[in-house]
Image 1 (cartoon, rainbow, N blue to C red):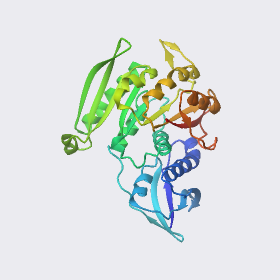
Image 2 (cartoon, rainbow, N blue to C red):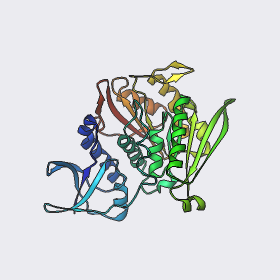
Image 3 (cartoon, helix red, strand yellow):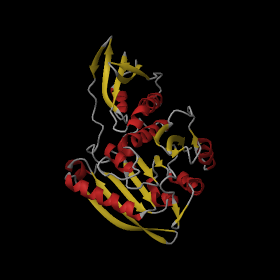
Image 4 (spheres, helix red, strand yellow):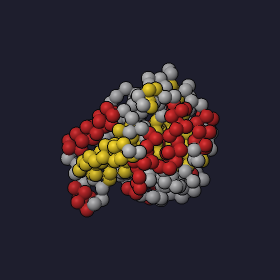
Length: 336
C-alpha cells in the first residue's frame, strides 16, 4: 500500500525550500530505525510536495511513530489518484503553542528542533521506548526552545546555560504558561553543589491533566544557570537518553568561559567528554552547527575523540541555509 503525507507549511521561505529534503531524511531514519525497508521520496501532487512510500508492514505503532514527525500536516492512504486521510493518534502531551510563544532573536525553529530530537531517537533505536521514560538534555539551552519542544511531546527535560538571564526568562515564561493554561504543577528551587560551588536548580513537576498529576504520572523540567561542561554533574542519576544542542553559530556571539568569549571548537573540546559521561549508555545526540565556523569533519572528529560514535549518513543530508552568514548542518552520534 502506498502512503503519502503533506508537509506543514513554514513561514520562513529559506527553511521551506529545504523542508522536503530535511523531512525526507528525518522520516527515513524513523522508518529504518524500526527495521522497515521502505524509503520515502518527494512527490508532487496537485502542485504540493508530498513524501511518499510503499509501506507493507503497516500497524498502529508505525502510525504513532510517524505522527511524531516534525513537519507532518496530513497523512494519506493512496488508491490510484485518490488520497484518503488517515486518522492519526494524538502524540502531543501539552498544547502546541508551548515552544512557539516565546520569541527572541536567534531562536532555532521548533520544527528543526523536533527534527533533531526525532533523528537522535531514531539512531538510538528508542522508538520502542515510551516517551515518558526518556529525558532530553540541552547543555546550552538558551531560553529553552529545546526544553519546551521536548516537554510539549512528553519528554522529561534538563537544560543548562551559562547566561543566567536566559535561564531566568525560560523559567518565568514556563511559570506563566502553566498558570495561564491551568496545568497542575509545582515549582521548586534548591541548590546543587559542584566542585565547591553552588548552582540553583529550578525543577518543575507537571502533568497534562489533574488526574495524571494526582496519580504521579508527571514530567519534570530542570534548569540550571551553569556552564555546559557541568551537564553530567548536574544531571546526576537522571542520565538523559538524548542530547540535543544547537551550537552557537559564531555570528552574533560565541560561547563564554569565565565571562570571556570562547571559540566553539575550544568549548567542544572541553565539554564533549563531560557530555559523554552525562548521556546514558545506548543514548544518542544531535548537534547542529554553522558550516562557516565549524566543519563537519572537525566536529565528527571532536565527537569521536570524546568517546561517541558518529552516525554515518550522506554529508549533504541536513545542509541548508538559515541566513546569509549561516548554513546549518547536523551531526548525529550514539553513546556506546
